[in-house]
Image 1 (spheres, rainbow, N blue to C red):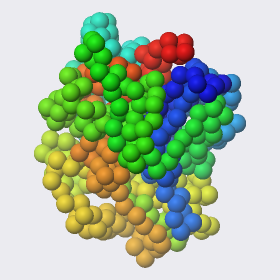
Image 2: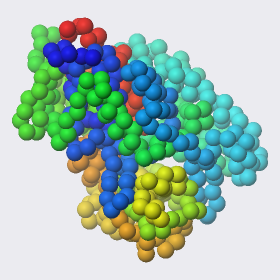
Image 3: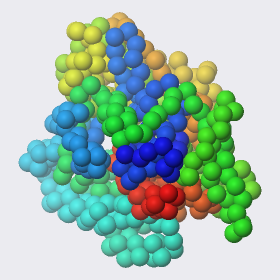
Image 4: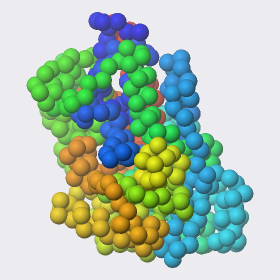
Length: 503
């Protein structure tokens, strides 16, 4: 364990990426302190508790449990001793506007049966799609996922794999190239929405999510995703690391060097307190970090102009609510698609408007874990993808009418008499992502994962501008989603100097 006086690392933010980075650094001998703006850990994975209900604020599923197993193994412990994962079957129910649905499963036979139920002629297409998704997983995730992309050489070395995957195509184009049935094209292309990407423009490399889920399953953490965050905090503390809450960072302190670059020396808190460190790791939104925490004279690469010219992921409207009855016919995970798919995506990602129609992700954790609500009750969270704040939407004025429209849509489809049974409620809008979670323009997943905003083109894990400054989380490589941010912490190990450098 690191002793007092040994090299110090400050980690800004206690989301999955920040805690994973802190644990990995502690295992390497760093004396680690995590600084969290909120009153509890988790960041986007914060937990809301009210009226006897528990609501995971953000991530709801675990799709790469081996990455958590690896994290615990570094500390000589077993993840399964601290958190119980329960596999989902089916993974999701995708309900179309006409009332038909597709149960997306990890069972190969059930998946083939579902495909055949919609379009028997597309069975062979499904098999070909799976083969191509497997190739993207091998070339994109296994071989390129943890490459740090610090140099143009890293980019050039990745180009052959990008060509083999035909990475210039969107995942929707890839699905259209395989399937003739319009509904199956949606079923096989929606996954990038889970990490803030537009299926119409996100590279087909993200078909690797299909393989990731098939190989390792989709899991629920008993007690909620927050139970993993709590376990990560305990693991960090067992390694000698510490975490401070209500400790917002207002500036990364930087010294000038003779080479013309800055060197991170610590942070200043909103209270005015200054903390020294040998390295600083930001798990805060990457663009927000550069724009607000790093002085402009130290940002030759991530200038305000470059930040403002980037394209941002969608944001989210999330309504958390509890009911006084249980809806036993509703599965744990359900997508309720609206009347439009391509048009809705263009409104959200291209036109930056909030249309009257919507598609929804409905999460009912009490289908698996009754502990998330009082006896006889259900806990829900329903998520609507919306544009980030460049839409100009006045969410203070619009939030309640939007919530009511969603409530009516749910009542008309899968939750009859819903509004008579609501006993607790709260909402999150893009304003919360901006003001509470400090996400640039309220984008929920950082930069949009376009081909030219991925890998070498995404903010690097080792800052391009400031020595001793590092990035983890959704806004850096490889991107959003729990597997992505855990991978960013693993990539961090490849670019942070050995602790003996500072000893």
